[in-house]
Length: 186
Figure (cartoon, rainbow, N blue to C red):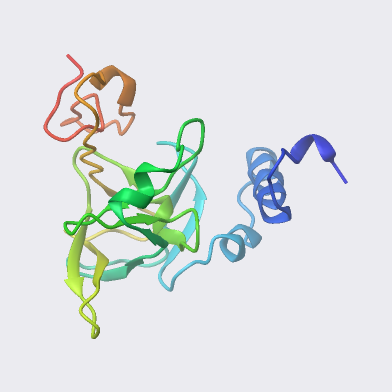
């Protein structure tokens, strides 16, 4: 076993992700990666030119197509504030009722949607049968097979944070230069 790929607290799934990521750089993406990130029908997770892993269409998708629900462990705002998120890769999504979804814990492939300032998907809140808010990911315009799916993260952070701390690499002609909501890195 390559112990240099195992960090304190990492799992065998983490190790496999790292191995597949390293192999994909050399040999192209592996179909095993999808099994590791709980893929949804019609999409796959693979290495992105934007950042790390991304979500890609397996077939042409029309505007308004349902991609999946953003899944993850739910935290109240108070619970989330007690957790140290520093130096951790996070997949956090805040809902309008203050609930935080952590896609790194119990999430699915939608957690790998990368940010774009001119996104082709959006996250829409709706209520399920029990009244709980769920986050529906759907396309905003047609996406060709092979295209990367993206959402605008529209991050909100503490006032002392600089937009330069949240640089965007989406490459869009309409790029704000930052992933922050309504901000510009200029």
